Length: 329
Ligand code: SAM
Ligand code: SF4
Image (cartoon, rainbow, N blue to C red):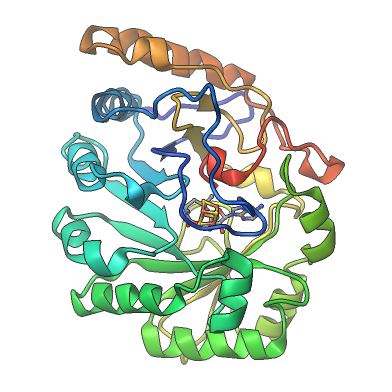
């Protein structure tokens, strides 16, 4: 089946759907004061609306959907959402990103729902640093959840951390992840901190280039893997003595946008062509009944003509994104 394509030769087999803006963490770079409910808040996408998006996307050649948020697992119908998307022909992979706070309770149900991959955000393996970054003392619970997944023989786990200057960017921090990857056979990636509409001061204080981690990996004889284990913008590194891999997601690096293969839908049903784009056309009016699916497909297709070549983040452009919880990271 033909994939969605833009005017720069990129194709889009991968969509991220944010299913809620709500989050129970207070990460300093994202929601430092926790989730605040706006006065004029529209309801988040319902299960039926998500099903219709999934159907349209599957008919447009999309084969992978990531559920994200806010914290996607706070939704009571989270497992049902996974099951519904999994039942669509052509959607080969349904994956999600989580802060992991309740993985220990839901690990069994997500594995039973046949989810294909889970990205867990763990900004530090040091309890105090973790608490400092996320505002929550939940590291131990998250690690219990991760172990639970491994005990269930669930393989596709990636751990992501946002790299923060003077917080989790020392050689000791990196060594700790090295041990972790060795004993857990997971993939670990550092994400470079991104500036958003709300976090300029935090960004100025904590942004550091991911080259510090790249240099560490090269020093320890990790080898850059071209092609890589994860289609998309992560640069991956492998080592003969390790099963797990390291990755670096560096949005400020040259050519980052060239490998962009993803589009996003916000929890209120806006299509976002770029994490930092200023366009956010609403799909909601076309999500109300099954007869609208052909129109929905036409609208998504037509919108791709407006996708820009780059996010222009390096010029300080943050588009209309106040924080990544509002669009799903
Ligand atoms: N709540 C879930 C979580 O934290 O995994 C899913 C949503 S969160 C917005 C998705 C990812 O975006 C997380 O890995 C988070 O660390 C990352 N993130 C959020 N704000 C960021 C920023 N300003 N720069 C870089 N990464 C960010
Ligand atoms: Fe919540 Fe994820 Fe944002 Fe942290 S990064 S505040 S866990 S949405």
